[in-house]
Each structure stands twice: as structure tokens, then as C-alpha cells.
Length: 279
Image (cartoon, rainbow, N blue to C red):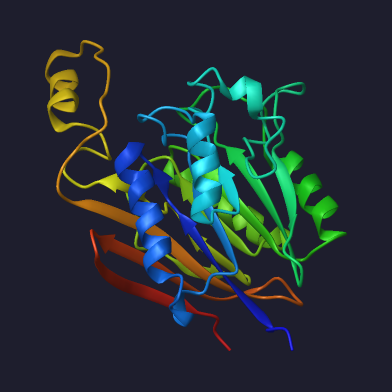
């Protein structure tokens, strides 16, 4: 008999090799743990290849790790080889509100056998690259996906907290199952269930802890002290972190029943902040 619910995990922005290895090790370590038996795995990978963009090799590596869907944001175009494979990828989506004609797709429905799940990637507009307005566009896309499945996930890649909160509440009224904010790389402690939708303002990041949101401290400090642009380098160090979010979703309705943040420093896992649907 099929389960009545599914459990998904969403990894916050994966930064460089430390982040890729951290995601790989986390999934490998927990693959035989029934409490970590995820039905669907999503990761934001726009910073996965040396901090900027995604190479085809790393794209393929994530699939090998067990990542079902890769979302991204404004940095997805930084590695120019993306143009060679983004249209061929069945696992990668880019923000839906890039102008018409942009390579890639902004949403995708994944058939997992006993359930189907839709994922939409969206780019914010406040303090970000100017893109098309997502509000009506996402509402139309949600209606389209709901003809196939009630389970819909959104990765909203945005800078401004207020924009994330407002867009999140808007999405909850559309019947979204889970909403994950990304881009700022700092996990927020506001996970909740809103109108049956699992919500968090920012999922955080996966990568080296000994730096500034995954980048080297010295370079970040220099930029602040001098105001002179300098190339960021991915932070290295002995400690890596996983910031991720688990959501349990009812198959029949697409409603979130529980949401939990995951914080993992190297191999020491700390789980906290579980929210459940109020009866």
C-alpha cells in the first residue's frame, strides 16, 4: 500500500566543492535511515561550481548523489557551458520569470511513480536583476500544474525579506505545498505552515562554515574595507555545514503537515524548529 504522505528535503544554496561534498555525504549517510528516507530531493545549485554557476559535470554529480530537482537563481548563467546543456537537462529548472525565449524551463512536473510533484523556480525583483513580474505568471503556472498534481513546490530566489514573506503568503493562497526562500544564505528561524503550505523565508546554505556565506572571509573583508571589486573565492576549512528543510506533504491534497529545519555541522546533525499543521 502506498504511503499517504511524502517527505521532501530542500537543500539551501550549495556553495562550491565544500557544499557539493556536504550534500553528497549527508545523503549517503542517511540513505539507510528510515526517518531520512526522502521521497524527493531538491537543491539550489546556482553557486555549486566554484561559487558561481553550474558545470555539466557537477550537474551530473548531483543526479548521482540522488538529487531529483535542481533549482537556481541569478548566478545560473555564470558558467557559459550552461547554454550547452540546460535544454537537455531533465532535472534542472531556472527562474520562470526570465523573458520569453530564455533557455531552459521555469517549472517542471516530476513523475515519481506513485505521485507527481511540480516545482517552480522564481526570481525576486527587489535589489535583484530586473526580470518579468512573477505574480500573475506564477498563479497561471500553478493552475496549469494543478491539473496534473496537487503537490507543488516553489523556490523563491530573492534578496528582500519583505518580498519573500509577501510572495510566500500570496503563494499559500494559490494552494502551494511548500515555499522555500533562497539567495541570502542565512537560514531563518521562521518555518511555519501557512494555509496548508510549508514556509521558510530562507533555507540557508550548504558549504564551508569558516567564511562569509560560503566565501572566503579575507576577500569579503577587503571588499567592505576598500569598496574595490575583488573576485570572491569559495571558503575552505575543516568545518562544513548543511542547511536544509524537511516537509511532510499529504499526497491527496498537496497540503503540508509538518516542516522542520535541519542544521548539520560536519557530521553532527542538529534538528530543530519543527512545526506541524494546527488541527
